[in-house]
Amino acid sequence: MIFGMGLMSGSGPFSLNPAGAWNFEPPAPGQAIYLDPSPKRVRVILGGETIADSRRAFLLHESGHQPVYYFPPEDVRSDVCEPTDHHTACPKKGEASYYTLRTGSRVEENAAWYYPSPLQSAPAGLAGLVAFYFNRMDRWLEEDEQIIGHPRDPYHRIEVIASSASLRFSKRGEPLAATTRALALFETNLPTRWYVPLDDVTAALEPSKTTSICPYKGIAGYYHVRQADGTVHEDLVWYYAQPFAEASRIAGYVCVYNERVDAELDGVILERPASPWSHGRAEAPGLTRG
Image (cartoon, rainbow, N blue to C red):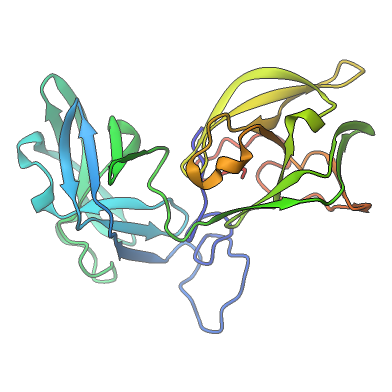
């Protein structure tokens, strides 16, 4: 699974379900598009070869979607791009044309696209820029570091803060964890996530084979929780064994879906947040649990 939130997704200001309010008339939900120049060097690798390399790439932010890198055609290798007869129509951008990519013995059909004549309502500068399906490429680099899942939204932020508050989690009256050493992780458009030292977990944890990708924190592993009566709650707890630098403090900590358990903070019962994970692990793309 690959998840993430930001400017145009989740409850972001230009998402399908914005949480806040403007003092002007914004685009209708689902209609906003923003073409944003990126200051980063961005490279795309396929079949062991670099097929795009640019310091002039753009991030296209589109309501309801994660950002997509678009490259000036001069920074894309034309010798690996084979025009095809495939076309798709976007009501906000226009008709897209496609390339099949060939690098040695590697062939990815219709894996790159561009808008030769975008709609007049599309962002200025979009014409001719080339985009690639993220997960059909082998690697993506921003400067010299690999990115995973999807391009990171520069308007997405993570903040990890230590808390000495008394925090308790329980499920159906059975204690799961209790700590005064939690880390509160605040992430754009997401419920506050409370990370607990593994030593402060009293629940019976069973390793899960589930993993998920967060472009901002890394690859998450999961635990099932087995209660005293034998009931198993699958993938109720997650952790990042090797989190990215921005979230390095949560290494050695675990987090529980506070949508699905009872939480008490300094003696106050917390309301369960409403989210796509209220009834289990979400499968929809474009989401992250925190």
